[in-house]
Length: 221
Image (cartoon, rainbow, N blue to C red; front, side, top):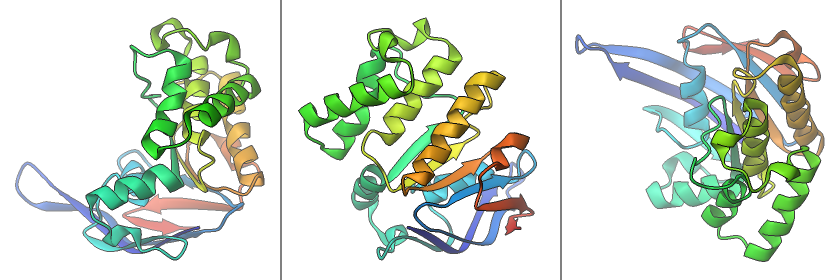
């Protein structure tokens, strides 16, 4: 589902010098695989996920979704590929505070141009599965951190994306809610999605098909 080859990325420091973040990163993830990436703070894990999810461009290398070299797409085509193929789960939830939990979930369908009635039915099912259907009409500020992350997870998987990217999704959660989100991610892999998780939690490795470490811009087993 996902193949990245030779990814390179750097940032300009205040001094004007270029600071490498990713150096020739290669990664292949098939449908049904659950890949966990760890690494020290500042090692480039979030940058890597952003490049894989087409939120940032690499300076070198390629990203493929199945047979499509999506890294070569223009801006609009990348947006369409991202809406069609990728679900994101972020540590900071990124819910819109002025929308209800239910409408936050439905945003994913709007971006993908999905049938509204089908999207509403699927959103209802997901909220029920994640145990937050009773909070559907509430605004994000009225929800706990665990509830907000479950809502964000429902939004990420509403369109059944074949690729799921999760960046420290349990970082702001207590033990029980963190474990629930990890199990939801594993469930998506068992259902056939390609899942890439960045996490420092020791229990995140349970059920992983690959454990990788990002060190000095390179992925290592």
